[in-house]
Image 1 (cartoon, rainbow, N blue to C red):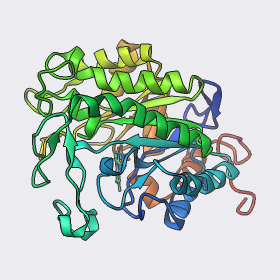
Image 2 (cartoon, rainbow, N blue to C red):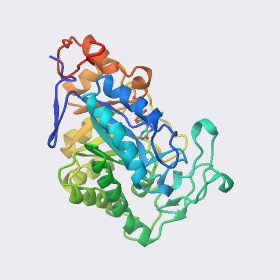
Image 3 (tube, rainbow, N blue to C red):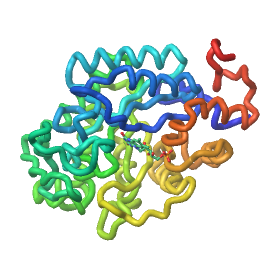
Length: 353
Ligand code: FNR
């Protein structure tokens, strides 16, 4: 009996198994609109047996895009394009989730396969906004957000969340990790504000909690995940104790699960990368904050993924690069774990069965 291929209840929804597609930017949208690339990319994971397909970081405002190629969800054209993709994911028996994001000081970056650094004005670059005017690497100098801009942010997440639900998405994930805007507010290394959003832990955590409370109030039934970086891997930065504390508050605010990643605040942190290296963070958050967790990061072997769930380290396992290598990984893993081909947790498409 496989735990990885047992169903999981997320609020009112049932996931057919515990395998989730990690959000992965494709830098291939025009004006924030996903296209056939995104349909085939995301659709292949739904066909391949994942229970929940999460989209890439999708910006809630144009200036919140990491690059000009990011997807967005602030207008009708984007919403309609997402709806087509969601329909295909549903037709394969998977659930669809969208990661809603704002890049903050990392905005206006070049599409990675077009070079590095900032997009020049002449090529459509824009001025990033951030908690403080603290530049990241060779990117553009950000402007400190005004109090009014900070106050507007929860509403911008809510507007995108409403559009996501209207497009058919089943699950929302708030991106508060990897050194993007919400994580910039959390981390003392990026947040030097002296108002109610900077300084002590409660101040730095305020905006993330406001975003989650606002989305929860607007959409009381929708399963809501929050991606956190459990640590900055940097002296004086955000750490796992902060993450456990925030996770308990996120639960109170209405979040259902913490998707546990790490890093992103500094350019070249020293990270002890190894298979499953972030799993212990997910385990600690689950045990100490009493909220469900997702584990992610260098999980590639079916037996390892199985162990994460069976040992109670996490409720869900997210895979990124291994699913790029093989979108049918869930079906292959189910076979390796002895799950019968007829099991509803890992159904082959009828065309292939
Ligand atoms: C990512 N990752 C990522 N994370 C996130 O929260 N939002 C995103 O949009 C992206 N984009 C992205 C693009 C690509 C091409 C990769 C490979 C990764 C990180 C990803 O979700 C995951 O956390 C890491 O890749 C670690 O998991 P794996 O790949 O070791 O299974």
